[in-house]
Image 1 (cartoon, helix red, strand yellow):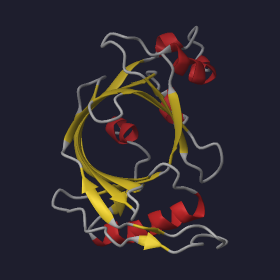
Image 2: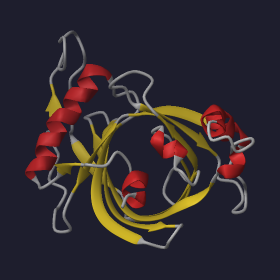
Image 3: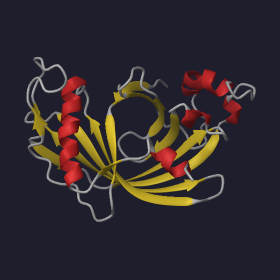
Image 4: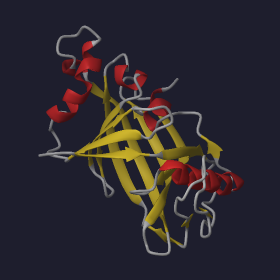
Length: 228
């Protein structure tokens, strides 16, 4: 089975339990928005489609010394939602760029980490001096997420941004410690990127922060779930 790749451009926000995702219709930027101006297209939210709440369950894999996390890499197997499967997230290739996300089909419950994903992090795993490196991988965090996704569409029905409202429960495998929190994630839709995409996220951020959101102090759910 083969996998797929995409560039993930998102911003994360911490929110309190009582916060409500605001009305986002009308959020947008004009043509040529962003650094340098130019002839870019205008982006404006014409309507919002709300998905029913979904339950997501993810198992994150890393080495005992969290070698992947230290390199801004995450490897998980997730069930539930529209993108169930194995997900490998790699750090940006250029400063300020989005993260490359590699997807692999879900497979059986007892399936080991797919070889195609191991190959992408083999050099990183080998730095620990533990044989082939892959043998050091193990589950380190179990994540249960209750997600409500808000799809922000333009006038032609193309998705500009997905705003995910997540209630999260993280269990650290090493000691069973549990941490819970709520966050919002704003991720650009397919084909929305560059200066216009950044400008759209900036404009959206203003609306979300007015509703009580705060830029996340943690770079990922894994980092927050494993942190002391």
